[in-house]
Image 1 (tube, rainbow, N blue to C red):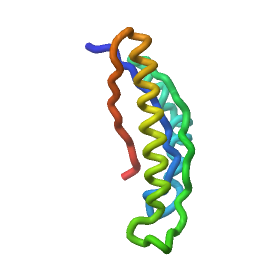
Image 2 (image 1 turned 90 degrees about the vertical axis):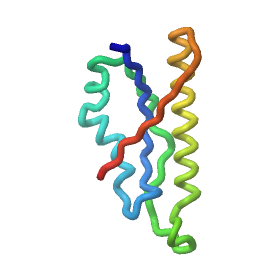
Image 3 (image 1 turned 135 degrees about the vertical axis):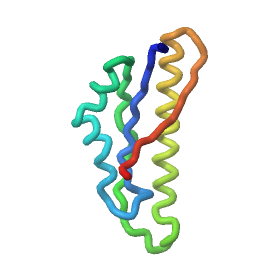
Image 4 (image 1 turned 30 degrees about the horizontal axis):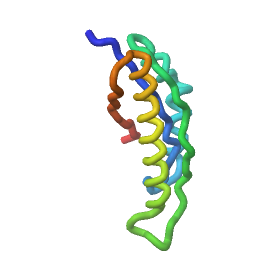
Length: 106
């Protein structure tokens, strides 16, 4: 089996949601032991959280509320993931690869 290497990046944002609260998920997942579970069988680097955003009504754009905040958070996550992939690559002595996945409450 491959040795797994994970970079964890928190995105404390509810910008694209319809109610606030989702922005608390990264802290809650860490408090619940996510990093320890991932470390059972993988190397894990916690890169912390990107700047977040708490949902608020955006009456000027009711069908695309907080779009600028959604884009800003997504861009910050992409940058942090790329930086993490680069660090893992340098540790291995090879080219960087990144796989982005996200978990959201259903």
